[in-house]
Image (cartoon, rainbow, N blue to C red; front, side, top):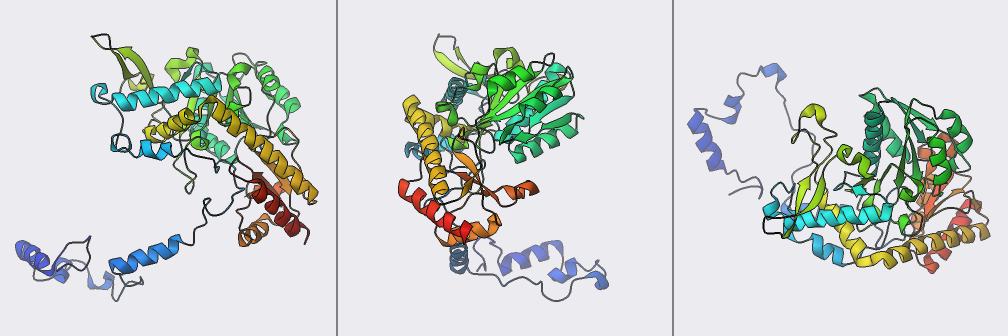
Length: 451
């Protein structure tokens, strides 16, 4: 009889194995280990639980988690609570998708290849770019890959990044830059946006690229036209934009502002927030840099009988081409999450994505106004998408604890990233929030700030 269901080792099994190797006991197996270094006594761990006891224990732990299905969330900063059409789960739960890996054999992978191809097409439509790859790990790594591409193409070692780019994305960029000794220079933020005057003085002929976020980390919509003009001061300097793809349902796409590369995170399109992952990044560029894109592309072709088909093409990995000619090896198959985004975009359609983006703007601005009416100091200028900054005047950690007691998930503590933002909160308002939730949140938060 086994003691534990998933450790099927009976006493008889142990006796037979010991007999086979000629040992009288388990202790004899370790007789060569000096007595003085052997562990004596019992390990300081809790006693093993039976399966029913373990299930109950884990269930009780899970009940302590706060989730966005039961608690209205005003937390964003890169992971958002958005509407996900129910058809998304139905499609991605099909075994031929959720068990799929890299579709090396096109003759048996047409479904997955077509799904990835549609993802690329939809991303191009949203961003206004000419070509997109078949997904990245997430937004920050996609941004870092874009920066490395710019350094490789221009053969320059200086990259300028706005301080209004997500702080975690900037950390990833710094990590990527260490190996090739690329200099990362940060543009300061002024009134919640990239300081254009300073940027203009920083760009020179040694600059590989200028990177901004749109909308930026603080929710503000950057002036891409002016930033692009500043970037072009440098000889061959590339213009890279990290963009929330949902916002592009309403905002002018970066491609219209002559961006060379547009990257971002597709979590906002059909991927649940979970507990921070997994996500799906996108990478879109002009056809000029098609052969420099990291990862892989899916292309449409015809078979020998003239029927439409899909294949992996332009695979710039060292597994496929000479190592010295390869681009990045960042190509783990994010196809399931890319599929989720594709299904969500298809189900919503152009009008649906436009409507959701519009609701994000309207509800966020309504929330900001309600907070002002409750005497909360809203710092953001009017040009924000679905996030804005407030000054709580006291530790955000304490405010969020009290908000949770009142049934709300509060905003992001900006003091975690920069001491000068101690007491400042980044609040996200998506289409999921109702008028009643916003009104009550504003009332409760206003009371906490002024008590």
